[in-house]
Amino acid sequence: MRRVIRWTDLQGVLRIGVELEQEGSFSPVQGTDDPLPVLRGGTFEVETDVVEATDPKTLAFPTDVMLRTPLDPPEVWCAGVTYRSNREAAPGDDAKPDVYDLVYAAERPELFLKDALSRRTVGPFEPIGIRGDSVWNVPEPEIGLVLGERGRILGYTIGNDVSSREIEGANPLYLSQAKVYAGACAIGPAVFVPESEPESFVIGMRILDEYGVVAYEGRTTTKEMVRSFSELVDWLLRDNPVPPGSVLLTGTGLVPPESFTLLPGHWVEIHVPEIGTLANPVVLAGDLVSGPDEGWY
Image (cartoon, rainbow, N blue to C red):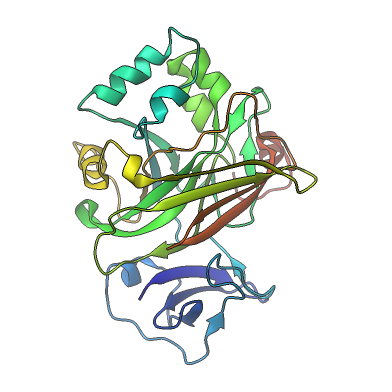
């Protein structure tokens, strides 16, 4: 088993698929729509009919297969200031980055709760939100750790920790307002389950404007992280009852320049070769709250 996905078919039935042998070929799991038992390594039966990706590298599928979040994490946590580039990318004026410098050099990492019960987390092709009371909003592409009992890493996914750098930069005490709001998190398109712990991941991000023109493109690697995955998990679990199935986003090494901000109509693509491409359109977060009932409340 290499990757695990979830999708809904044209009848709205939620299914789980596992990539067993051929790349891009997913066998539906029988009898459950909960991926956790599969990710834990339990036994399961699959159907003979398979679902084929039209592009195994990005995990694009035919129109009758609508990808969903690969799981519904009970909690999503984030780590910050975990890459070398974060020291230059921290928001605020010349005085305020001292706060981030101190965290960067400290033993204790920055950890915060991004979402609970998946109320603010979306999947592939669903809209991510930006705050309407901020003029500087950015995506933050990250590797997400899917955690099992006692913090065991069950697999890896892509996460987008959408943030208002203006609000965070105004005062670090505004962090929760800069990070936690409707559509502020995306995960997917799959959970990658390697045979052994990977040495590193390459993360690429491309942002298209409303005309389909590339407005930003960048690339980084988790080799640039100053903290290990296991170290971040260890700190997260200290005196903290994190439920199985939760996701820990491990920080970003890609931040667009201050001259760039996300706008409604933009399109964000985050690609990790082992996992696929997480793609989302951008809308105002307020539209996700005040529009028709989309399950937020």
